[in-house]
Image (cartoon, rainbow, N blue to C red; front, side):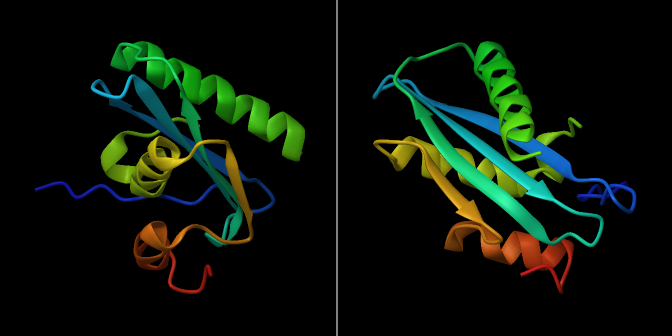
Length: 122
């Protein structure tokens, strides 16, 4: 059995993970973004909500675009099973009325996963 988990970027590089989730009933798309360094330390994270009900592939593409914008403004794609922190942030995005940003931390829902990925990261 192959077990996948988050893997850190090379030394001196930040890795940005993104994810999207859809709430069809409320016509909302939640977007999660997290940036971590080679030790797994959280540099920044964001949960965003878009008031449109996209197809999942379009929502994922928008999440990637927002991740690139996030990287450009602040200074790699992996499957969801290795990207659970970003997925947690999508859920926060669905609950938000506006974009939310955290610096050097993540919301409480994501802390266990970040600590599981890299125990010294928070």
